[in-house]
Length: 299
Ligand SMILES: [Fe+2]
Image 1 (cartoon, rainbow, N blue to C red):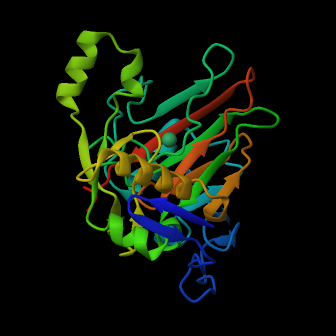
Image 2: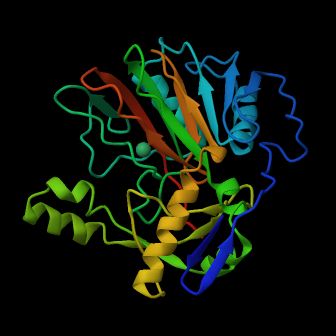
């Protein structure tokens, strides 16, 4: 396939993607079981009770998260909101989301979707990329899920970047993009509130390609929900480049898809992935709780 971006004609060809682990052989784990779901992204973990993980299991989960970018845990129905919060806290300070309504525990954000409040997370995105320090990662727990539907997908931003044509990589090297909550969260706000929030959370300028602080891998870092423009290029070329990059994010080759059940937990690296929550279950109900871990400034 051949396309044109700005002055560049680009040819796409086959690429060899990078495995979840460097040598293609999953690292050995002594304190948990790990089953890859795809060769690159997503692993199912068993043998860990998230209510009471041992220090050795936390150490192995740190490595597993970096290698597999999103970890799935089944049968964690017994987990309380406090235990959910405490598990996430092993990775750092926790975020209190500045815009989403808070429940009894401020760090736990509840997403209750159904007939009155349909799901709206069905766009590929990085959580809260409109902040200076987007989260390191999120731990999402299913409490009520439809009998079928409401799956979540994650896409591997390291492989999405590496598989880009070299000319596109050269073009986006060093570019920054604008991230802003206004076109999404801002839509329903009264003008006064919007102005107040815009003053508090001005648009951020993040690199189009960030380097993962732990793995050193380059990661594509523009998303369809909060990235509003690529800076420093002709606006038309910027729109075209952004469209091309967002198409890359959405390619099934880089993805893993999770079918939830009550008690399923997913823990993703928000620096290395994007995610998409399918809103195919209307009018059924889907209730999830999320705890996010504070991250660094993308660089
Ligand atoms: Fe999200």
